[in-house]
Amino acid sequence: MERQKATNITWHGANVTQEEREGAVGQKGCVLWYTGLSASGKSTVARRVEQLLLERGVFTYVLDGDNVRHGLNKDLGFSPKDREENIRRIGEVAALFADAGVVAMTAFISPYRADRDLARSKVRPDRFFEIFMDIPVEVCETRDPKGLYQKAREGKIPEFTGISAPYEAPLAPELRLTASLDVEASARAVLVFLEEKGVLQ
Image (cartoon, rainbow, N blue to C red; front, side):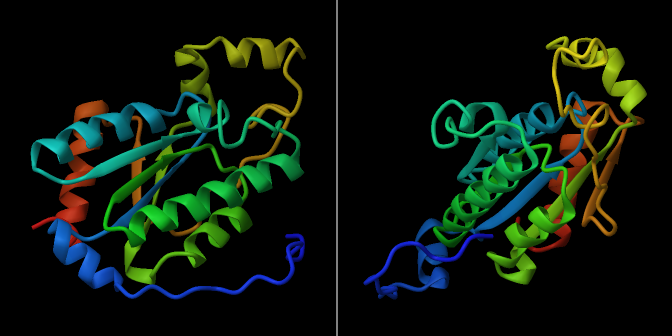
């Protein structure tokens, strides 16, 4: 990561603590970091979890990989360096959401362990949960809603994760979701996990 470029700046501490913010909204902020190959179901599961959490009165937000690249990260491509910066930025944003008492969910391939570890380091240890969408590339290819795998196989998309670029699977994710679970079962598993961790009452 590059060194700080801006000079003559000072970090300003808050007059309100994270616990006080959480008390005001009546919930605990955290980051659910979904990672996995393209078409593994990250966004789909995160969106369903978002619905279920809102039904329970939990304030939550999904930071989706494609959506973020339309705005905050529109200046980034898919080179290894750009992927690193993409995840660095979203890790910072997710940490801010969690600090505000929001259950922030990120749906990014985030192929490199080092980048995910950096995102984890921005959040309290008991408030960052890596959710691995452990879906084999063969299954993801059969889904392929955007036709990306076919284009990657044809050489039309360079540096495509799982085909021509690496994916470093989590070594010890807090939660692993497999192809044996459909969207609803996966989402329910996330809620049970959050209950066990004390995020949900």
